[in-house]
Image (cartoon, rainbow, N blue to C red):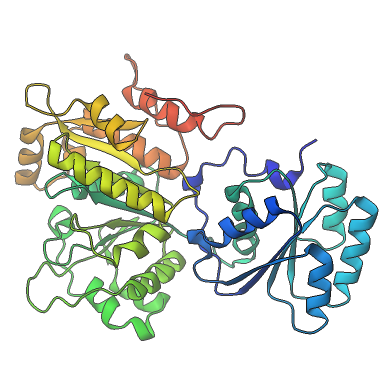
Length: 427
């Protein structure tokens, strides 16, 4: 029988959001080489960037000895190979030396639901059985603080283009509109292309304040200030606008952006980051904080090189999570382009989305002052945006009446990854 601590994360799409743990002290005590490796990999994950984390050996007995001399941390993760009786004896000794507010998670080697229930009755916050992967452990640890939060913790999704003109901003804007309009998710679109951002144009907004004011006021930034800086485009869609100016553009610091995103999680259910296509080191903070990264490219040789470098970098920043979602945009069989299958194989991607080259649609939509998705809600762009929006919202896109749904076909391999007993499928 599988322990409930393991079962609860088996079918959860990772995009559903594990926010970073708060700035607390976290101690891991491993008893086996496998446990030590698991704890070290967990400590290096993006979700552990804010806590002060230390990994020790010796299991529960070492923890008991340590906290006889010093104060226990806010979160304590303990591996134990002991049998049921010995485990309860070790935890009884631990209870004598830890402070009452310490949250304790036990990683054991006994897969028993009754043991799990009895441990929770004794005050253990969670019990997970080995073998265990990093994501399952992070799901447990993050869930502790999600459950204790007064308000739900918002999620972050980043959109980035592999080259200028790939259409990443257009896709980000259309998906944001769809999430706010169809799914009624309180969404904030943050335009981080300070010089050439187009979010204001697409949503016909020219707010006096925006992202620069948030960066300038980082020392006093809080939920109230962010709320004032957000420009309301519709009932559920807000804009944190860029200045769209080449004058007096200050550099963005990684810690500045990380601080803004922490506050954004408190204010809105979803923050969509429209990132510039030119890579800067501060963008690491956006990638690390994001529950999903969408990379848009065109099927060209130069874009292929950039896409591979970008995907490799993102994978290194997020080693324990599903890879970014790749969108191949402006696909046209009549143009000299790299075939989609060859492009995806070269950059190491098994599942991707394709959007055809439709310059007339985008040009006419711009002249009419509407989004392309509004002008053609049944087209290929709309289907691709439905897939991305559905993945973010955690639902399946609706089937198209009267014909086979391309959106459902493309989403199916993505969803199968998160179903128990299903392996990853390839295109």
